[in-house]
Image (cartoon, rainbow, N blue to C red; front, side, top):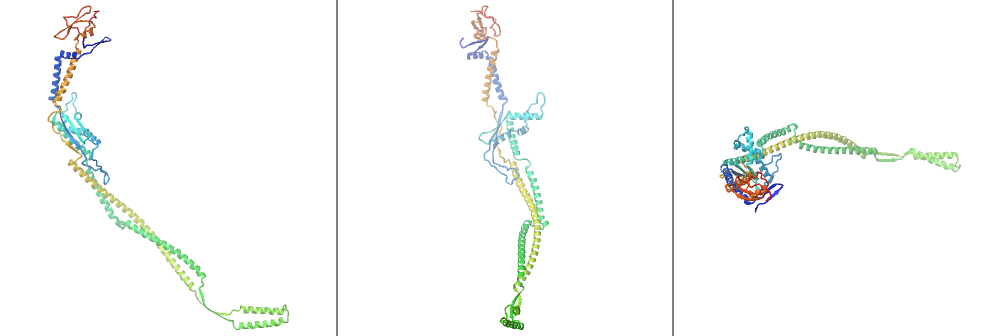
Length: 524
């Protein structure tokens, strides 16, 4: 038969159907098909009419209008201002909206847990109802950050138009409150206020100690007094060095003067007069003359070795010696040596200066020791005063820091109370007037669903029906030659006549069934 193809593989028979055969199935099952089609379509329409779903949306704008200072110990914490909102921040805000804490508060505020039906086997606890309502809310909630913008869109779908608007309004309020709490910890103003009071007390105590410090040491400014004392100490040390140098110079001078005094006579001859020895010298000269005359007389008479002559010569020599040894009488006048007197005066003065320099050095050394002790005490007092000054300065800085932080916290809380945030609801949710599903779209979807269910039912009925509907099925199943096929107008079946060698199909008992066994026919 044209349009039909029989394929036999290992005693298994398969047929390929044409469009005509498929349409024929629909006509044969037209009553069931019509009932199924209109039943499914009516169910879809009833679902759309009696269980409508409403959708509302809200939009939240993330901006950088307000910059909160970072809570640090620095006087001027760094502030980074960016004009654009990063993608990570948008995703963080989206996850904050999806968080369980935010959605659980929305569930409790809107009473979504009250709509949860009790269980079949056991009653649900309030916590279980809240968890189920939380999951239901999360499933019907669509949160997305719109690309290329700083806006977060939130959509919610429910069966009640007022409920969707109420849920989104509650979600906005809870989300803004959660964002404010996360960015500004609770109790910040009270904390800085208490710290400011403590810092004020510490500053007052430090200033009192600083005021009472001069009464203990008697010096208002130990550092200045220490510097002045060290300056005077340097002068004393310089004077001591000068004094020791003077002592050394004086000692050397005394030694030089003493050495010079030893070689300098105490007196000097101022006048000297000489005179001869007088009568004794005259007598000696006269005796010498007599002896010389006598020798001259004897020399003319005797030989030179004549003993009396020699004796006479000896007397002459002795007389000459006596005359030569006789000094003339002198008149000498002496006076004090001025150089010796000057040396003695300078020596006495140097010795006196030496004793003065030694006494001055000893006194200066004592003063230096006292000044050093005073400088050490002043240095210790200066260190103590510096500690008190640092403590007072630190207390003042802490007081100013906590005062500034308290003012920042107060301004932050005032901004929070006035809802001046970096998040603003750009679009408030409104109660929807029409369902979220379009009637035309629901009708199209119901029609497509009805067509699919009807086609499936028709094919299922055809597959479950054991009757032969076409001659090709007979030839394929029975594998016998087909002589004639008479259709039954009432049932759509065929009365078949086959050449099987032992008989034909029962023309009065109805058609053969696919499940019945027919003897194989012999050759035609």
